[in-house]
Image (cartoon, rainbow, N blue to C red; front, side, top):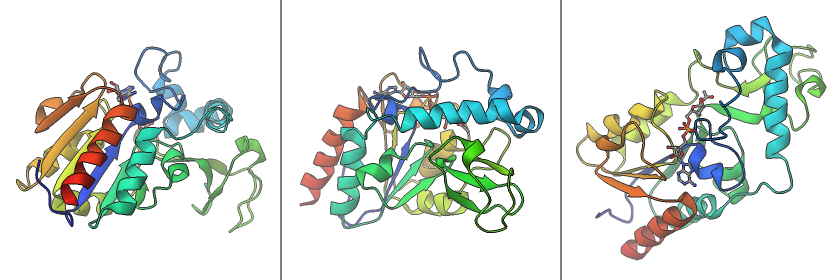
Length: 241
Ligand code: OAD
């Protein structure tokens, strides 16, 4: 791999990067979707039908995320280090709704599937921090309406956030790295093909087992994110120095 020290990098992360921090993935053994039917808890229709069930599902995840044992791991820290030390742009696009990238110090970050620690007002779309169960989210700080808070997460059938910025970054990047994502959920699963279409970018997949779109990557590295991501960051920074 050869990339100039000012080269632009886009990193896509999925549940696999947070697995070693104690947050279950979606589809693995004991994954989050085991025991829950997607359409009962992660769609706008589900929320319209049974808001309490949906809120309970996200309340449970929020409490788990805020448990004292949950912390960013070496992979989150390595990406934050890359962002600080690299001369070019490093954009981290995450499908994760946890805040582990922020806790590790990442700043140039897009949460394309939303953020668990934010509430959104159904009346005026304002978002605000929410670290408690959603029933206690209180009145919307902008319009004052109560009882209209929903988790600020993207459900199936809704449009992911930041897509315009992400697409622009994919088209101009020289390196695209996907970490810990099964490649089953679009549009994120299609990012590698978008980058490959530009012909000037190198693409690397880091995953424990491989994904549904592994074949589209130039380089595939198999193993744990907490080992392979720090190694990749070290390689990039050494090659650039
Ligand atoms: P998945 O649970 O589908 O996939 C997790 C991936 O991480 C798999 O490919 C695993 O092999 C890999 N993995 C697990 N542990 C790992 C480790 N320690 N190191 C490296 N890789 C590891 O999660 P996502 O692909 O992120 O969307 O799921 C994508 C979207 O589907 C989620 O954002 C969510 C879900 O439904 C919405 O809720 C809208």
